[in-house]
Length: 258
Length: 363
Image 1: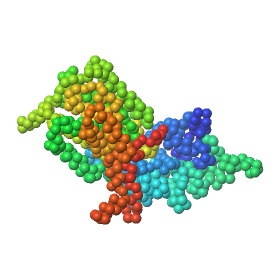
Image 2: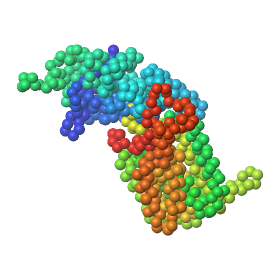
Image 3: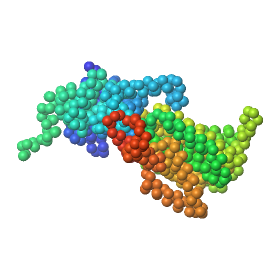
Image 4: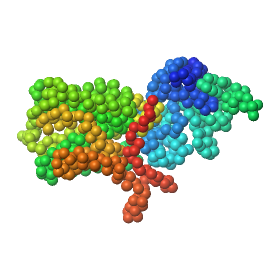
């Protein structure tokens, strides 16, 4: 398996505070990679930097052999990295289908002016992308609610929709920021199954998650970070019993002191 | 309303056609020259408000449209007077000049968002009229007098369209406004319009699906400048005299109020309704020149309190109200477009609300 995403010495500093400090990660093509750590460990900052929403202070990010350090989010997206945000972010006042349709945006190939003038080629392309959006909506099981406004959906479906929005652009790497947060057990189970299915479609997945059960169930490799630094790396069952990890989550010597 | 948003449906086209038809017969009804003047002013204001909504769609509050309106007006008047060009040549040239100015300024200001953008556009709105008022070339604060009327158009068959009467200018205004509306509708219906909408709803999510914020905002801004300059050229020949004060920041703020009053969720009809109400109403209520701003102020305060969604937004919310829908359903039963078993929810309950840019949405 080749490496699809690599960070070298990735650092983000806010004033004198390090959110992420010298982080080396390598994500292999086709795996489900988990990034875990206690609150405030810098997981979301890593995602922000990989997704192009924040430029790193130092270090570099290499995606599929090319340096994408500091590229803006829309260019990163065009390269094939899709991000699902932690807080469910949707185009709330658009219908489910229209949301996914907007997700197809980068696939337009006809020149802009021809789309304003609605030339034949532009109309054909538009029809094709609409069909593609509908296909994704069906694939994700959102067909029964396709005409509803995104804001009127229950939480679980909103999360599914945000994944659909990312998937329709055919990414090679999907960044999932806490995909099961706030979900009930059955929604969590659906999402877990969905994530495995996405991987089976050949899309590499990198996820940040608090729910350790989900991480144990689906991740193949896990990196634990704390205070922006890597604590350990390995398969989830090994990482879980690592002394340093327990320390980070529970605190050192807590039980002795008590 | 919401389900057809991304595809302007037949309903919207019919609505626009009806409005245009109604506007076309106005001179037959409004025979008083003064009121016809008020209507022409309202048409110009509507188009300006459309440019405000256009840029607002991308999440930016633009307070400089009156300045580009002024650039179009001054450009047209000066090209007619100093270069001796025909109105029909001067107008497109002035529009091009204003568009180039728009792109150049846009390259700077569109990089900002939120308050930074508002302040920068306000600066542009303040500076351009001062430039007109300072330099001899622009006629200083006396302005430009005796702007020529458009040359008569000779149609095949010996018919000549002359531009002297208010009625002829009214139709010219209507044609110009219709061109603007058609151009805007073309953009809104295309992928560009969808990208604008996406940026306005969530700039971070729009970026994450590959939409370049700066580029699309620049296109919206530039198109706004172009359209404002286009009606500016018309205004120059219609008014016949230009003074810098007309194009000051106050005008831009009025333009914003027209858009808010009409309902910001409605890109074409909202500005038309808002501009007509706020142009015609103060004229009808006017008993002396001085009391007009006071009355307008009262109207605006009442709007903010009672119609925060704007006139059309409130009507849409009323229409989507479940009780009203139940009542209609009893009188005239029909299948709702929703899915069986899925509650209607609060669809359309707040069209316009989250169209306001969200602070800190982009970083």
